[in-house]
Image (cartoon, rainbow over all chains, first blue to last red; front, side, top):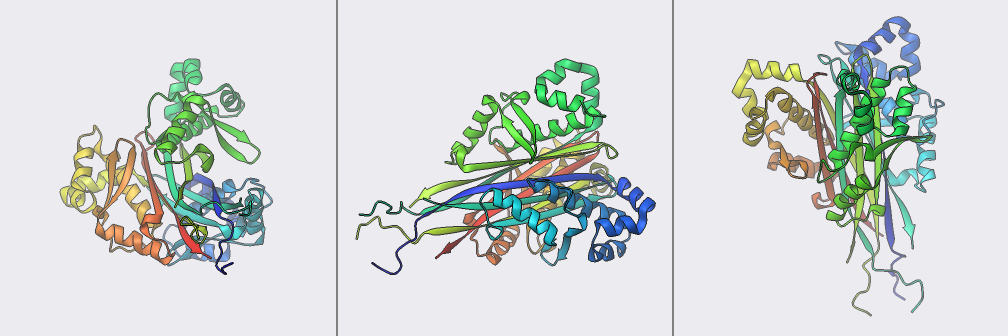
Length: 152
Length: 152
Length: 152
């Protein structure tokens, strides 16, 4: 038997999950004004806060991150309040924003994927955010695609 | 020849379709005020109506469902007006919203997938909705991913 | 050995990238009023302009296309300003909007995919746009899914 005999063929089952969230920038500005650092620290990581505070109008950047975190939670099959919002970081990278998940959030995503027979390595996640100060709102969107390999 | 001889290997072609829709909550509130039950019954299923009416501000929940239904229609390759809006139900489930399609809508999705050589079983669909009463709008988003199996 | 001996089995790695953008219709209307044709020609193709100008309220159609172009740029791993906006056309087709990419934009997408070991042929792209004149904003969304074939 040749060494490179094929494994059983793989037939890919695809799965997609998706979350979108819109938020009024004014609503986030009100929360920032009313609760200040206690709100900031509960919802945003130090890196996120440093970035938002470095901007001319921090509230719209906070709002976009809030929306993206909500969108991530919506992409979970169990949108449990047990995932602290600050466990979901929107990391700024040269090639665009990425989700950087602390263990509580990563475990929740792994549990969602596990229900579908998918390992976290077989999934890919994209996040996008947008804000428009004139219109007064921000949007976050998260898409997760994965294959559940079915060996016949 | 062994019984478990592999089938020809499968090489997956991926396809994605996607729809997003934004709608002013005030516009839906106006339609509800002007047309009442005739609008409700034409656009929303009994379960959707029961949920929306049980909420403090029904119009924003109706608006989010309207947007999600429009997003589904945009994900079809033939966004035919022959699909009654009430055939697209946004079902509330413990693991988040799901599209529950009556035959007219399911057939339209199957026709879109068939054009790409995909069976409905090889596709997965995700829906997400969001509303912000302060900002005054709702958003719905639908993503469909599928594999078109190519046997070499 | 039979002729139809399978190739090595293919195990699909999935990748997704995604961009969403929201824009105030008033902001685009202001740019149109202030810069007129120089703005139109820099950002929109002749076909896009012809379509938008044929509509009752061109500004909302320009705004939706602006948002969709921004969403495409966000889906790239290198959202380089070197891609002229007019190189990304939102083509109107019977089966919905499609991205029609001039070489500068197609090359940028190919470069993004290449970083992931994906050929452009193995990727599929979807675009969706929406606008609501009452709410005053437009949204564009782009999703790219691809397989990176891994031969074991």
